[in-house]
Length: 191
Image 1 (cartoon, rainbow, N blue to C red):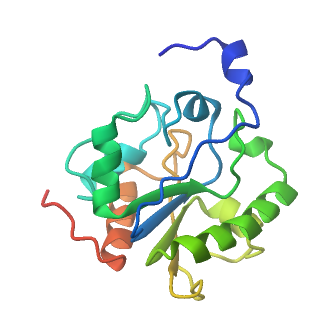
Image 2 (tube, rainbow, N blue to C red):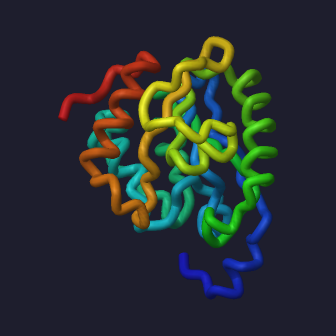
């Protein structure tokens, strides 16, 4: 699917449903959806995003999912069968995550805590340290397992899969995602 800039901008502020299978073993938490993601109603839809490639390399999925034109129902079933959920700190779409205010991140964090209580994942994995620090007032937080769990859910921070994140290679992402998957009790596919 191809959208003009004007068509994409029309999706500003809109949302898409969380992917929260029952049971959710591992809940990946992005910052917020991008405009294309909401336009096609599929998480991490932008082609430059490395999320699904990293899931495959980590052994979390058995193939690379292409969400750029929307989810294939078989791919959604595959994620659900593996216990993989996806949401965001902030539910409203923006062109770029840096358009969000600290207040929006904090309010989104409060709402996310309630969603996590409802979904009850084994592990919550935030994809991006900067947004996590702001949303949860944890300025010293580091990537990896966090010292405080949310109820029965382990809290982790892993690198952001955006193609704009030059700090982490695809191999770095895969290693971090594999670690959180194993912590959630997901047996990786062999690679």
